[in-house]
View (spheres, rainbow, N blue to C red):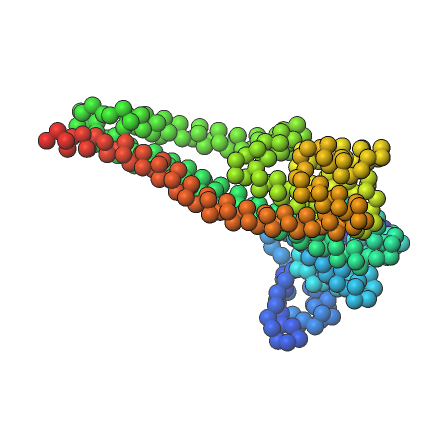
Length: 407
């Protein structure tokens, strides 16, 4: 049976299709299938009349399964399970609704595992690249307590909020990064093409150049002569740093610690980390995961080595009998608001809801911080670019001003 499944998986190839749905609307997508007839039959079951079905080109870029795909799948699965749709049928419907062949294949494998008798959390655990320990622990807790639909809904909400935070952080960092790259390209263009023209003009005049002009021309000469070395060094530095970052935990930990101290961006990263920490903890604790086990998952999901180490210390303290409030205070990196809300939650027996309120608060803080940084970065970047380009322009025109003043 296993060999048959393997042979089937090997035989499946990606197809691109176009057609119309039951309402006559044009639609298109991709599907992983053993042949064109299988694609058309599958589309007919979905109420779609296929007008064109063809194999995906050899050089077509294979789609990857993203975090957004997993979040959307979880939301759809939650909705169908809550509506009373049997789990295996829910997997079928969800797989057909996605155009990503890689996700369709993944869901097919998970469905086959569940169909053969595996628990849902065990089927997910066989794919740690897409379903982390936090995801699987929550599903396991939901299966054991008989509240799978509630837990899936909580996981979907959690993933949607975490993706929203990540998107906001990326948007805040992307703008200055793009401007810096554009500034480098413009400056390189001036050094390579504009300044050499001025150099030829001034060499013909025989006049002595101001110090600023001579320095800019000297830098331009170096750039013209060694531009390939500069570009090569930059590319090599980026590649080497990427390799070192992936392989060295010590480097990642140091960068995480430094990231919290960066002016302007440090507070934003800290707020996003606290929001993620609080959201993860409240989701796990509300699902009935024991606190010691929950903190282990929270540490891995925090996204920052400083908070990860502090959370693992919390786990050790609580395992020896300390309260969460006292452990948070001893860590000295968690904000007072979180500590106070945890204290209230422990006293009132509503720890999950109190920490969830902290997550809501810090997610709003991230929104405000991103808006503030975006409005702050625009004038700063304009001043920096204006100073850079202005200095080069003044340096090139200084000799002309000097000659003009002599007459």
